Image (tube, rainbow, N blue to C red; front, side, top):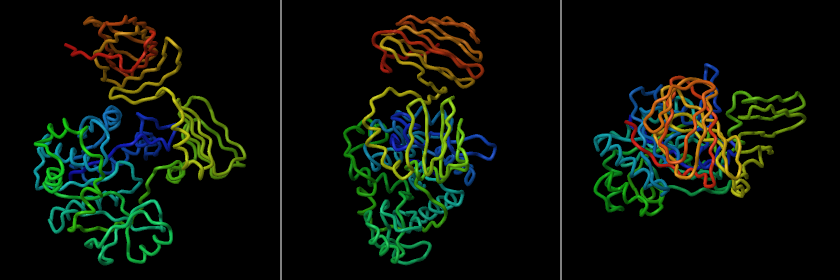
Length: 437
């Protein structure tokens, strides 16, 4: 099974756990059987491999998410990087071209496209596999998954099938309706459009060449910024006459707000917190090392991270985005391919951060033109390379790095250090990378 996972967006509706770099799908909030926590993308990836251990998974995403994907999923997953945001049709065209031209997948093979962040059980991925197998038959150019509605929702578009069978040809599509109209659609066996579909690679490549002048993946990538912003639904689905829909009636939740997310939490508290017995419907998600105490509250979400603190009525939490957009603040936490960092203190001419490197990982070999750095190792063992000179480091060691000097650090064990950046122009863009011999 070939799967393209669409991973986009900044997920500001889950602030303060999400930010412009750390989207909602990377927040570890789902409890695994062993008691650890995993993110949406980790959960979906694990479920895919459980249903099909040989599945070829490609994540279509932006540059800002690549490090987090490698950190959470490793290097086996394929990544189709979008140079900029151009909506779902360009993203899917680029990912399909990546599979064919870079990964060498035959144009006769089928691909299943789905969002990276649904809350579903294993039967969903069994249905995805069946979706791909149906596309293999070539009875239709597109095979959609239609979610059986559980209520007359105004949030989703609707697929009207020609009959009520589990597999049917599509009669028509309907835009997001009001509640009364949704009730009428449901009486016509209408299904929610969850943005999940399958096709043969050659079909989407043909559609892409019809709408875009390009030769191959590299050419498409180089022209990506010039492409029109257009959705796959508008560019392809609404114009295609040969479409089937496969009905899915299992559990399916679109986790886009705090309210819907708390419905999936197995326990009311993640992190350091206490809820007393006068509370009801209260959830705490705390990433800070300070305790949170809730008393006498009802239907409230409390969330704390280095980015900020949210205390909100659950229903009101759905309207968070315009308020978060007003904040102008530095990114305080981010995952990298080698580990993560958390900003501890921001001053006019200094920045203090806590860096955690995973065992066997290293930073890029790089230099800064406008700042000095001081590293204090507080846990673990590893080595530094400064201007080609290696030095073994462990807890208590201090490394001073002047501006312009090439440097990196390599972790033998989990390695934690406090990094102090000093300078009048401290910026994430002040970085030049080099090859480490």
